Length: 412
Length: 150
Image (cartoon, rainbow over all chains, first blue to last red; front, side, top):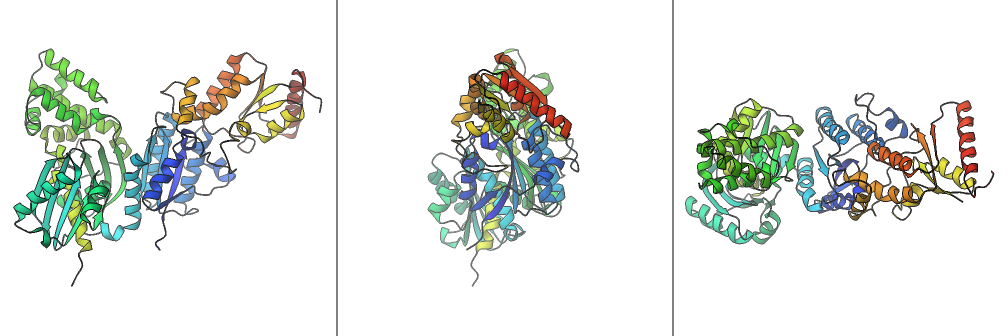
């Protein structure tokens, strides 16, 4: 029996927020074990002296002491989960600095999260699953070439995508809005098979990712059912041909966003946000609808406009839409409004998430929103760097799944 | 017998002193008795549920972190119930610890706002200070109605 992946928990306020059962449940679902690294009272008293951050809250001192024990090798773990209360400034500083400290001082995968009492195991599951994947499946993630004939499926919150690959080439694609998880998947599989000219029986292995991965993966008997953080980052560096060295992957999705620092194809630090829809692809969909254009036309329209002419900067999709309506009522051009909407989404992602990862060039944007050129341009301006959008970037989860699934092809 | 809120709430020494003088100590030992089954430095009171931070809304607004509100769901009712309070500032971690600096600020503020008798002392760092520290607590507890002499 494989021993569970041991995830060290560095937390402040979790016990008093009622979220400990949720943390334990998320870990249990991915066959991991959450534990507190052992430290002494002397460790807590001296916590921060070496680290250099003097905090007032004793539980934060305890977090620092535990992080020091992990980095100095006095405590052993396979991965680290850092969790503090949402809206606590002191904890936010500690959370970010500890994440950086552990990333720089050890090889432990680490993810940080700010919770409220409403945080559920479901919210934490993808993050925990990614930690377990990185800790346990490094060999799988080391794959750099696709082999044989594989099918990759991404059952996303907005769209379902399919990719068929053969001998390291994409030969079939399918894309449909997600309605019913299985039905949408069958439609995109049919599209991809038609384009590839293959029969379903010729598929040698299948990988599934996205929100519907468990339902879909179990229904079709997938060889690989994997969360989208590791799959997408793997797919991104593969498509962008940056499998060695550092890279940053940004995926602005329909329901949540991912920012991942990758080293040699393996995620090191990642954040996944989904609290405020003003920073999501959904806001851009609403913008396109309000402007009376197709979402595919939004990017080119935004490239013709000047975003700074229109005040728009809201975490919230409702307030963002209000700004949109007000801007149009004030006589601003659709081009300027489209550019402002792209800038607004990019700015929210920049402020809310990119501060939590270490941006390493090249920056690779993936997912459906990476096809909105105005958004990519706005992100590049904010980061002051060129942004790479590889071919097939909108199929990123499906490509990553197809690539990794080839590790499951039975030889002979 | 008076109900005396102790700060830090986890201080066994303070709790013991209050009991010896015939009063009832209010603090973590009492409030989490029902919640905690395993004692220890980081004993997670798993029985605290997501409903507890909502109860804490009586003492702190919704924009206050959930960890503060969860703690206040334990300490807030005790502060309302207390006849007196003892506050030890800058206590050593081994003496007692409440974990969260923001909760500490709110607890001290609410205690003072009650207008009940409060003894506020700084944690002693020498034998001489320690003797004066215990004497001050004894004098304060003796002055409360219904107390006993140790």
